[in-house]
Image 1: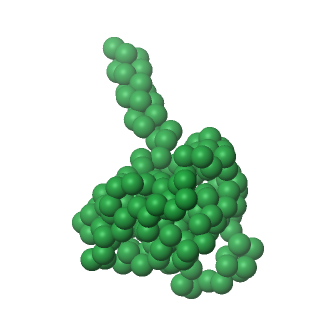
Image 2: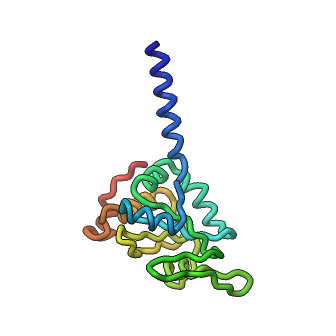
Length: 172
């Protein structure tokens, strides 16, 4: 009987761990609402459907178990299409899609990237919903792990990046 209970408990625990094999992406508005109730930093992955490096980051960096667990635990993760058509309200302003040539861009993505549309880009907001940094380009797992840790728990306030990077202990 004990063996049956032990096997059942292990199966339930294994099932619970499976829920962490992917990032629990939110909409921008969902993350802002959740952050009001339970403050956490916000990570915004800005991508486009046509971006090869965005797809690669989804298949590699955002599939790494350590990255997935860290993001789901310490951040409200947002997936923001840089060419999204729907309006998004943030800090009293409504951001819209702006057609440009054959494509266009979303004003919020452009504002976060300060007009330098580069995909993928990863933006970090603090618990007060202030943009801390936008990091353009593909980020491989080991570098991304450091960046995630740096913008979590106010490390960016207390330690210069070079010093933080030098002393960082990877979980990978």
